[in-house]
Length: 498
Image: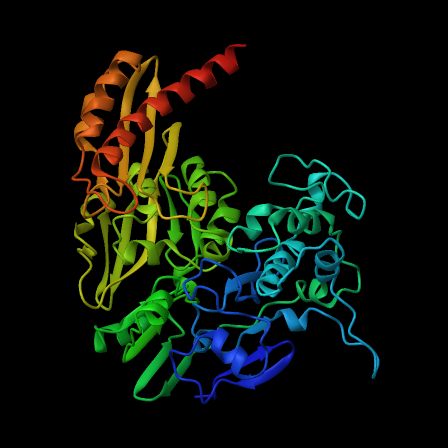
């Protein structure tokens, strides 16, 4: 087995003697690259963000911003990253480096005050700066005189910059206006920009990894059969993809595992295929990859993505991981329940397909057996046309939901032909609102039907009171979510008729 190594700012470094649980953040700081900071250690502040070369959607390579505080450095064996220090271009001996365009705009527009969060903002901003097609939204590409000009909407600049790219970065002292100005001022990468040219080449190949230190081991198998064999031999191993959940356990709760098996680069789990009767989404595709590959073809998922954590988290998180944790407040299960999804479970003996509605058996428990993993999620076709995802939380974005409700209805000739409703945050598991679905199906899609169903929806699950919301509030929000769907549907019909 070749020694584990990682390329940082163009220099190949050995991962040893780091432990299998050492994060990318700690690895970098121990080597003097202190631009990346630890603010929260759970992927909420973005002060640690770095760029990783990943397989691209529109080009061979995408520069993707990720939380260095969550990913174990062993997970980047054979991979290539760039930190805030690596963005500037070295000058002649005795001269200062030339700032990267993103760094320059942050400086001249007052986007930094204490500077603690600035390197993280710069890396997240650089990932959006290099996003293929960013400047195709209209407006000026140079941007120097248009930093505060209106873009297509409030969250996009005239240079196509999507502010959601910064949604996982927090600033406590500068204020966000100057940072927004800097983001909306950057132009297109120059023709000789080395990181822009790097996108035209293939990213590093995924390498099989066996990295052991201090009686623990990090394993990245090269194929799915090999992963299933390892899992049969070590059924207690922790399975990771983006490590957005396990990384928090390691950092905040000091959890350690004797064996961690990484699934994020397995080709068999990174496919997105459409057949005549379903869409199959590989369990190891990141949410950002799914979002960009589907490009709105599943409207309910398109509503989910902007509300799922932050772009930094979505760049690493997977559907397989979100379902595998079994959390009752995960954002994707209600949506997938409304889409009538099934999960494909695989072990060394073969595969089985389980309806998601039958998958969860208790708090963070499921029908997944020892030695099994989630290989893919399947969405049956055709999709229901009337959909909505309502996430009730204390913040508009980047927050844990108090209640989540997803709807997928087929309304034809004024009659509800099919109804699927998925709920989160109201029971020990994500649940289908079966009684409400039955009350809607076959009935007129009218205010009277909706009002009766909304009262029934209030009684679904067993909501509890905690620091996020009271049980009464959660119940009230369930009823209101159905009323809101009906109001939005009526408004859409009025808009079409007018």
